[in-house]
Image (cartoon, rainbow, N blue to C red; front, side):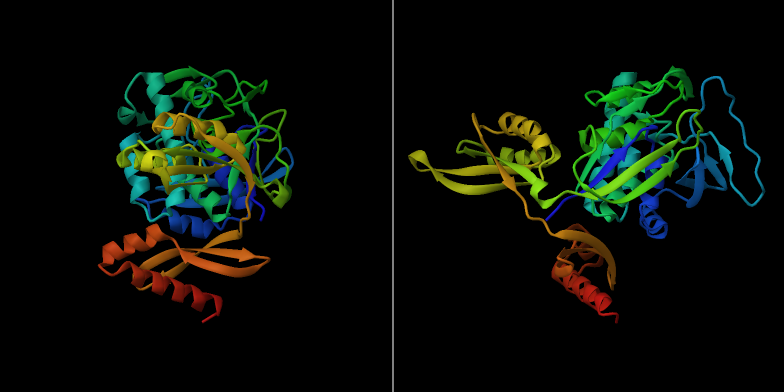
Length: 419
């Protein structure tokens, strides 16, 4: 089957609020998004979704309202911090930021009731930011404090975008080269140049393009999305376009609409090609083997596995294998050769048949469970509760894991039959 691709067409930059707005414009249910994000320990807030126009084009803007105010965008260095008066019933835009330590953000994200792929994607983005901030300020990653990207609204932008990508069933994220602005902006550390130092650190190895504007077009959050999530940065991929979403930023530019365009599409089945990388090893500690498998997934493997072998000199051994996109081949090979005792490997192309997938949430006596539903030619052929959600509920409620599974499947069947 085909793969679902989400392409970041960031002709006017990319930021967290623009991404979240574009995902909602693609059809993501804002109510369900807010419900999922409320499992995070972030205090009182709510989402405000609005339709705006930029240079005649319609877009969706998402704000996070906290205590009746919206945290505003970063201002150019020559502008003053100000409160924008609005009608009493509406929130006021302000430019204050909260201060979060990296470990606090990890705790908040891991403590929510979110699917593991969402947690992994969100933490990957924050890790990219934390490592860049650590290099810029010369401190250890664990000592990094987030100012511009640490506020509640940015946590919600990042985790909400990760949840939206998962909810839309995206298999692969790709992006256009990001346009870079010049000039200066104000930060918690004073007047700094554009692009912000952390932004440029994050974008090391990522293609960029000049914009000709003296404005911040790419925020650290937006840069982290491209760096941590995109498997390729370049022109549009070959795909059949399904939907287009437009996410609006706060600024107005003279020569272009301040919009992010997200394009959701599917590859032709013939294009869904992958690479299998393998190596036989017979002199590796089982402890190292377990770590190796984790590192292969971290490097972007779609799947990784061990197969027991009987090798020369009557030695028991392992076949180490990984499945990946062609663009991740070098990274997978580097990990396999660095982390294992292998001194060589094999690679060969394969095509992959993949069923269409979607996620639905069902209620059980023990709590909500996400169920992955697989279809072929529109017909459901499999429905499987997410293991992590079921295991967490089983531990919390003191019931067997299989009992949670059974209730989740029964709830899904009842839902499909309209009971």
